[in-house]
Amino acid sequence: SQTIHQWPATLVQPVGSPLSLECTVEGTSNPNLYWYRQAAGRGLQLLFYSVGIGQISSEVPQNLSASRPQDRQFILSSKKLLLSDSGFYLCAWSVQSTGELFFGEGSRLTVL
Amino acid sequence: SQQGEEDPQALSIQEGENATMNCSYKTSINNLQWYRQNSGRGLVHLILIRSNEREKHSGRLRVTLDTSKKSSSLLITASRAADTASYFCATDPNNAGNMLTFGGGTRLMVKP
Image (cartoon, rainbow over all chains, first blue to last red; front, side, top):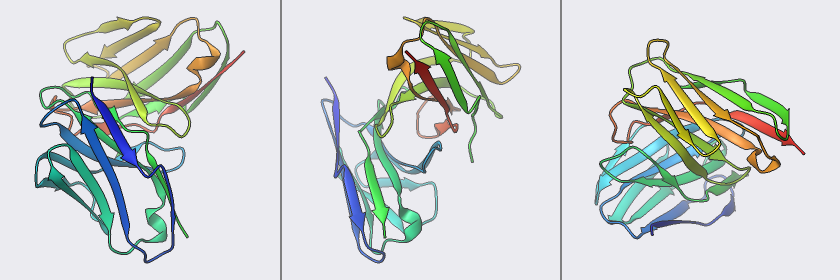
């Protein structure tokens, strides 16, 4: 069966510090991978998605970036965090032929 | 921007009652999906209904889709306290998942 792991679960970082959130998927190959952000009490905003290694599409201009160094690994990064980067970050994957998303447990980022 | 908008934003019912949540969207879709999110957790896929389908069932869940009105409803029958969660609709215009757009969600509370 397929599983998705996302870490760290909670992160408190000062403004201007770097960020690295990691996501890995097991039990499937060549998945579509996604990073979403969720503000408190709101819906999800798509940040990045990837259909293959090294292929990243950005949906929202910001100081975040994403990379896919391996088929089942997706990393969300920032060189310098802003207060507005605080939120709940969710990694997800999907089978390329269907539209159903499978989510990780999320990473709660607080920037102080 | 959010394609789907759920209504109501919050719903409180007693255990055993039915819960109905509605979703409206603006553009043509290939499929519409419903997800559930427990507080502080990742989203879990509940059901997908394609644009050529009008109704779909899964256990105590019943989803309808009216493409002429660009609306969908999620009915949870015989609700339980464990159904307490936020429910999101998501629209997919191309059946590939990478353009999935989420609404703001309905927060459901089921009182024992």
